[in-house]
Amino acid sequence: MPQMAPLFWLNLFFFFISSFLIFFIMNYFLSPPMKLKLIKSSKHISSKSWKW
Image 1 (cartoon, rainbow, N blue to C red):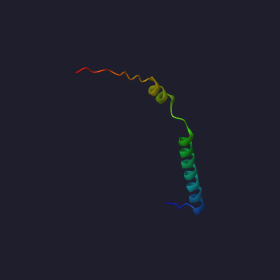
Image 2: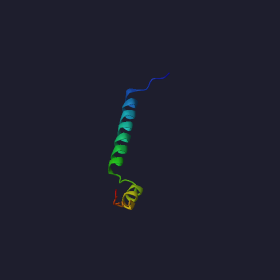
Image 3: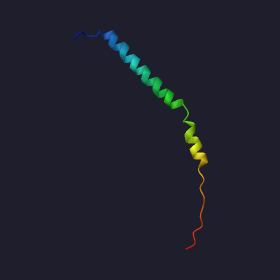
Image 4: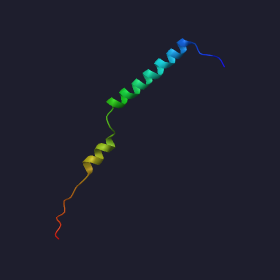
């Protein structure tokens, strides 16, 4: 099995680190989906007066 050169390992390391950073930054700055906002606003809570 051929061995990889150390520079290739370094390039691979930087590629994965940069992809993880981009992934986490995008998840941090993206807004939540619109479905969650609509579900929260469409809830109607009715208060019932219980007479025991």
